[in-house]
Image 1 (cartoon, rainbow, N blue to C red):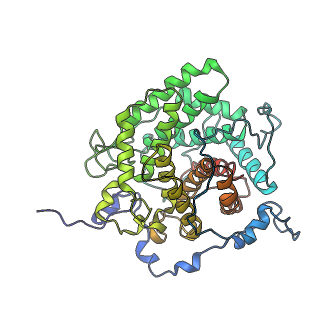
Image 2: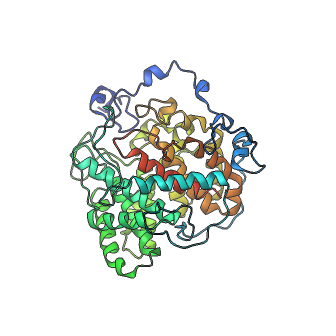
Image 3: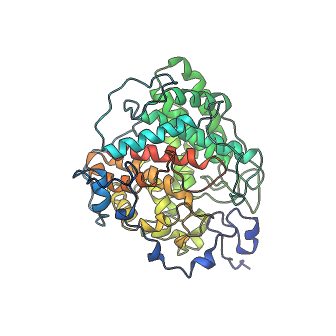
Length: 457
């Protein structure tokens, strides 16, 4: 007899009868059903000003401030005819901020003209990362808590969070052209980038392996210090070996294994783990690292299978038995779909080309309220369509990569729309964050936001 499927947690696939074991427990899905989703829709014009708050001066035409009041999401699916960039830019030649005067100067480069509000937001974000780097070169701490973060183990889960956060910060500072904090962070990844499975259930280390591999592979391609290349390659190969080790039994990756807790993770891949992993593997391959073809093929095939006919992506491969679950619909998939489209387009999937990418971006901005309403929620997946807070800057970062790959016309069509939903959320200290997680949320959110804004123009 086949088992009658129980309602599953959107985050981990755990049956509803066992949700007390899940990091997403108490997600408030029942309480949210009585809320009016329209009451939480935030229009671009409702966002507060970031630079010069309280000023009554009118914004110049064509500026971001003007766009905040006038931007209208585009709902058409017309293809953008623009050259496709073969390799995502690392933007090493673009300096948007300098470290404090006590730090060595950033790389001397030429800064292209930017909307002043975007430039100021980036400058403040970079300054936040520089000022909040740990003494050992890493970012993020486990020394603060609110009592309702996701289930995690000590020290394994926090090693994973710290390494992943550090890798994102290193990539952001590389993109921004900052050198001093970047170099300290890079040395941390080379010398202390180890992370392991927290316990049988928890595999947050896959995020560390994914983003550390991506960061190190980028450095191998663009870092001018040739003496670092052997150490960077060795560190990158360590991260790659761990992605091989923690590949799920069917391919791709998942950060939980609640049911079996086997040596080879048995819970099937999530769409966004597979997407982020494929992006990292693509960078590794172009850095000259020997990436196993089977590792790519398995993740690629699972991700293609998770794409639905409507253009959304299943939360995870085992959700194929629940295709109409809220998280699998377009509005529930907004924060994941951009990473999935980018990964499949980059690896030349026959299912995702420029037309599908443009259609996905149109959906992203047309229904943006349904990812907006999840940002900074207390619990994962309590918002409508099971949107989790931590999709927010993750999703916008990969939208930014899509704009970069579309080329100038893509940035012209979507750049201001993307900036409008990132810039105004910057905190007074220069950070961005979407889901409170000990002391990691501000550094990783800020890194994602800085990388996103650098691709808006």
